[in-house]
Length: 331
Ligand code: UT7
Image (cartoon, rainbow, N blue to C red; front, top):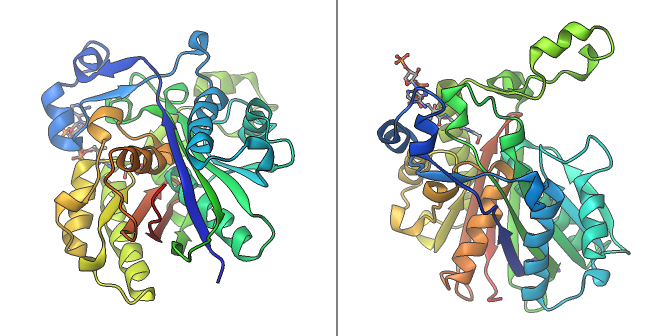
C-alpha cells in the first residue's frame, strides 16, 4: 500500500540565544533550578528586525527540506503547518509560506493542535497520500512562542523558545515510510495550558486591554503528570498496532518539553535514554517545531539509517497527544 515517506528534512532557529543566566536578570530564577527541573540551558528568540517572523522561520526550514528532497516547490500538492503562533489571525501561516517558497499549485493551511501540531499535520499528509489525493507534501512545525510568553512569569518564560522544522513527504517507492500514526485529544483539560486571549471579549469592552491578551498560562505540575501518562500510553499503542516491542525501536524523537518527562516516558516504555534524541538543552520547548527540528538534526548527524524504526511522540495544549512510527528510508 502507498504510504507517506519522508524524503527531506530541514530546520531553522533564530540567531539570538537567550541563556539561563540572562533569564536570572529578568525573573527570580537560577540556572541551577532551570537545568535541574527541565534540562534547558538556553533557547532561541526570534527578532522581527532580522526577518524572523513565523513565516520567515518556517520558510528557511522548508527550503532546506525541499533541497534535501531534491524536488521543487512548484511540485508540492500541499503545505501543512502546525503552529499556535501564526503571524496573523488570517490568512494562515501556510499561505504566507506558500507564497514565500513559490508552492503555487499547493493547498496550504494551518493545524492548531498545541505542541502536537506537527504530528497532526504529518497524519493529515500521510492520509492524503494514502488516499492518493496528493503525492508531495511539505509538513512544517513552527512557533514564535516568545511573542505570547509572559516575561514576568518565571514558571513559563524559562521553558519556551522559537524555531521551525519541516519534512517533505512523498508517496513511498520502496515501501518504507510511515507505518502508522495515532492522535488523541481531551478538551476537558484545556485550561492546563492556554493563551489568555479570548476573542469574544474584545469588541465588548476596552477593559480587556488590562487582561494582557495573548499571554500563555500553564499549570505545569498537573500538565507534567498527564504528559508522562499520555505519551507513554500512545507510544505503547503505536508499538502494539505494529506488533513491535520497544526493543525494535532504533531511535525515539520525542516532543522536547522537559527532560524529566522524556526520561519518565522512556522508562515506562523500557527504552534506554541512549536511544532517545534530545536537544531541549539548546532550544527549550518549541512546541510544534520541537519534533521536526530534532528529526532534522538526527538525520543530518547520520543517526537515522535505512530500515531504522523511528518512534515520535508528542503532547501539548488542548490537550492533544500523538505518536508515529516510521520505517526510515535514507534521505
Ligand atoms: O509542551 C507542552 C507540555 N508542557 C509540559 O508538559 C510542561 C509540564 N510541566 C513541567 O515541565 C514542570 O511542571 C515545570 C518545569 C513547569 C515546573 O516544574 P515542577 O517540578 O513541576 O515545579 P513546580 O511547578 O511544582 O514548582 C516548584 C517550585 C515552586 O515553588 P514553591 O511553591 O515550592 O515554593 C515554584 O514557584 O518551583 C518554583 N518555580 C521556580 N523556581 C525557580 C517555578 N518556576 C521556577 C523558576 N525558577 N523558573
